Amino acid sequence: MRLLKLWMLPIVLVASSWSTLTPKVNTNNVFAQIKTVDPDATKQTKALFANLKKISAKQIMFGHQDDLAYGYKWNDWHKKKSDVKDVCGRYPAVFGWDISKLGQGNKNLDHVEFKNMSKWILEAYKMGGLNTMSWHVDNFVSKGNAWDNKSGNVVAAILPGGAEHENYKARLDIMAAFFKSLRKGFLAKHEIPIVFRPFHEHTGSWFWWGQPNCSPDEYKQLWQFTVKYLRDEKGVHNLLYCYSPDVFRDKEHYLECYPGDEYVDIMGLDDYHDVNPKN
Image (tube, rainbow, N blue to C red):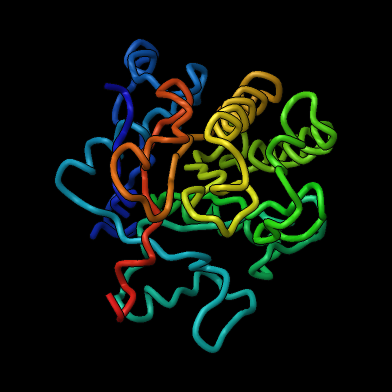
């Protein structure tokens, strides 16, 4: 089975001691045999998929959200400063980012400037780290934030034929341009691979795309449209797509909104509940 199944995306390798992104194969024929959601994915993106699959069999990777952007008692530009490095002596292997508010201002919901985020993504990549991206996208109907789930079925409104569909495509256009702008190199540039985790935690009710704010079929349609639009219409070829629910009852619940193997590279899980001191 092609899918890379990483429960919680085994996120205790460190970036300074392992490169997840350096291609281990050197022929076009070998890259063609690495099957991903995007058959035209860049060599670096396919190499990332192959390396993650290899790593996940025996090792895990430790990650930190916004690691280079801010930390304990600092939140300004610091050249490769990191709380993880300050505590552990090495940078994390996984660097998480969020592109909420992209196209609406110069900062995301964590007050990270996108121009600096691009630089930090490059720094993480050059160290051999893995960059992941979530998307706490605002409510297209109410214009509230991602947690505004009281304005009806927003997913139906942004699907083809919906009142907000063109606005949704316009937002995807902005996001596609950002993904394609993440590049390494001076003469022979290539786009930096990203593990993209859209519409995450959908098994919870707190986001407008979560249950019961849309039907499983509508969620699948939204996921499939998003992948096809970014891949086929906008030519974004540096993404691995990660399906990542939150709390779930059983296997059937986990897969209830699953859009299909041809639209998912990585199966993950957001897990906050197991660290609840009451559990």
